[in-house]
Image (cartoon, rainbow, N blue to C red; front, side, top):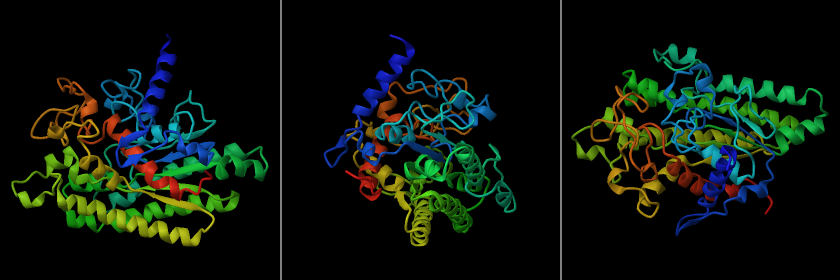
Length: 380
């Protein structure tokens, strides 16, 4: 059997496992095919990057094993051991996995992935004005919007408006995010207090809203658009934050041993983001905007960890990492010499202390599809 054949068998197995995730959430693995999406366009950060960042930073750990070790033993630039949420969404839609925009050998017939690891919602210059630097990339959400429109312009150059609308809007799914996490990450890890970062949230959400306005404007020109806008994860549950802000004060933690203040920050972001989505819905009644509730999808995983096969004693420990209570050290990140990988990544939620495992993304996607499908206005 060829490597390509093995890969497609792997995809079929992964998709079949998407069917049932618990007694309370059952999902048809290809239910999004009823939406008849022909293309998917993804914008975001490392949660959804399928290979853009490593084109500019080929020495990044994301460009080598163990990243991608369960993705046909190939490190593609995904910040996980395997597939991401966007991969499972594409599979559920009956579409190929999205190639990275910067991949010169990519196939772009069914969409593109513009997401870049390390990118921010706000412009890098706007963050710098507040003494927050981006050490990873100059890429921001508006950079990706510009690249998206350049691509769409190229597609439509020799087509009628009707042909263009069918290909780039009416049959397209746009996913804007998740994005904004790095704005907060950089601020917090560069010494800003949680209160200072909370004051940044309206600006981050305003940047996302501006990008959404651009996408819905495009949809208004060429026909109704369907857009998924994911919110923030409960960042207080992630090993990197649990390590950085570890405290002996038991009241700082919730029932899942997540840091309350950090989760409250994420919740505030999500609250403002949903308000922004509603405002854009009112302004653009022909576009369908759906909030992707990453926060509750993640907490649902924690609540049902045992039934999903996760090791309850290691729910907040990184699979690929060493050090401290959470198997995470910012000095020895996954991919560094001497940093080991746990024997069974499928038993862990966290892959490297910052990003999730393929299994966690798979379960989250099942919850998300169950939640968003009725809102996408697809014909069943």
